[in-house]
Length: 281
Ligand SMILES: Nc1ncnc2c1ncn2[C@@H]1O[C@H](COP(=O)(O)OP(=O)(O)O)[C@@H](O)[C@H]1O
Ligand SMILES: [Mg+2]
Image 1 (cartoon, rainbow, N blue to C red):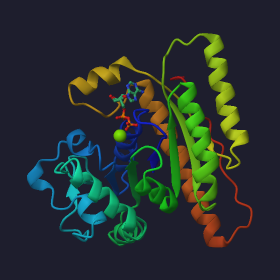
Image 2: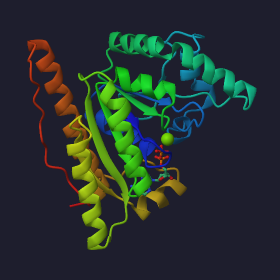
Image 3: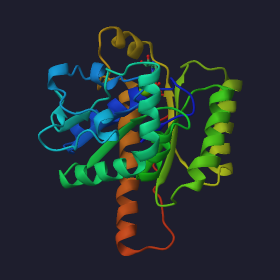
Image 4: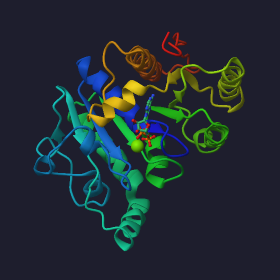
C-alpha cells in the first residue's frame, strides 16, 4: 500500500509505476484505487467507462463480488485494475458512502485480498487516500508492505513521523514499513540536503518501527511535462526509473524474505538493506 499524511506527495504516481514495473517483470498484478473521494486511476490507465464492470465502491459497499469476469484489464500485459467510481454524488451521497465504508471496509478488504489470491494475483498495489481515512488504516492493517511517501517540507516530515509513531506502530508487526522522500528539487543547497538526511535518520531511529528507507526521488520537470500528454510511467532511460526499479527490488525482496521467515517460523526477523539509488545517481 502507498500512503501519506497529506495529499500530493506522489502516492498515485509511484503506485502506477510500481504496478507497471511488477507487471513488466511478468508478475500478475492488480492496482486498486482506494482513494474514493478523488478517483484517478481510471484516467491514468485510460480505461473506457464501458469496460468497468465493478468498482472499489461496489466492492466496499457490498454491491458486487470480484471475479475473473468483472475485473478490468489494462493495456499493460499482466496488469489488472480496480478503479473507483466517478459517479459519487457529492454532499450527502459522498458522506453516506464514507460512512458505509467505515462500517465494513476491514472485512471486505480482507476478503477481497483472499479472492485476488485465489485468482492467482501475485501483487496487489493499493493506492490509498491520505491521512487517517478509515479505509487507508484498514489497508495498512492488511498490507504486507506499507510505503509512506513524504514531501520535502517540515509539515510533511512531522506528519510522517506522527503517523508512523502512532497508527503504524500499533498495527501488526508482521508487515514491513518503508518510506520514501519524493519531489526533491534536484539542485538542493547543501544545508537543505543535510536536513533531509537528518529527517531520514530520525524516521529510521525514532519511530520505533525500523522503517526501510527507499530513497530521495527528484522532482522532475520531464515527469510533469509527460503528465500534460497523459504519460504517467517513468521512461526507461529516466533516472527516476532506475530509482523506481531499485525500490521495487527492495520491497519485493523484503516481502519474499518475510514470507519465508513466516513459513519457517523464524523468531527474530531479518531485513535486507539494499543500496538505494538516491538523487538519480
Ligand atoms: N517526482 C516527481 N516529479 C515531478 N512531479 C511529480 C513527482 N511525483 C509526483 N509528481 C506530480 O505531483 C502531483 C501529485 O502527485 P500524485 O501522485 O497525484 O500524489 P498523491 O497521489 O500522493 O496525491 C502530480 O501532478 C504528479 O504528476
Ligand atoms: Mg493519489
